[in-house]
Length: 352
Ligand SMILES: [Zn+2]
Image (cartoon, rainbow, N blue to C red):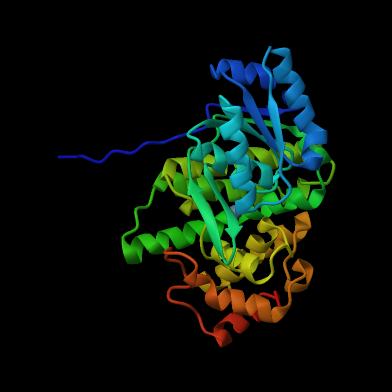
């Protein structure tokens, strides 16, 4: 008898387009959300979008409360939870790049409340997924919560964000190539459950960005549109899988390790992109997909070398040789690769 069951949780309303911030109130009413909205934002996003969201919701007769966060840290999550305990909001709204949205997501999960994601930069796939993690001392604090109830991605705002944030989002998506290969490997070697739909969707999303890499340009609203749609699609792949596997393999472990060794040096997506070049090399050898990944990153202006990341070579090698220790996730790194192999991978691919 077939007894398997899965829950696929998806965002219900995804608004992408020019000026959709003005439809925040409508999107929220349509979800039948009630109670005080608690807006979680950071200083710049507050100016470019947070205040507009507050106005929009106020016009609907709500009385939103706002909390401004400064860093992605465990203390900041605790602080937002503390504010939420006082305000007793009906739902949370994260307005920002990665930071404010991750914090809103994690505080909402803690308080068992829904949250709405209003990204002001298309910088990583956390803006549509239920997954979040922030550094907590030497480790990371992670949640696997529900995805946002709604995503409101205003392309006018996103196109105005610093271009490097958009290239980071692109690199995060392009890394799906190596994440899917690692997932398939884990399926073959460790019997990890693999979803064909999710794997295919994730890979196709990366392919579409690579194929369109030369049309992605700074300041073009259409580029913001393409990238944010890809981030949504990548988030859907994770929802179908019920895990971050379709978008997170060895290149993500490498990036998490860099976060510990060189905190704040480079953006998540940029680290992941460089990690993906080396991971592809390890997966397939000298004549594999790594050249395609590298040239796509290069075309959009994302870093492809340690120097461009602003991280020294020794730290890159340290991260690559210790990345497997981070979490119980089988990847091409297996039980770890030695330093000479890491140096070889980094050198052949031109990362070092
Ligand atoms: Zn990522």
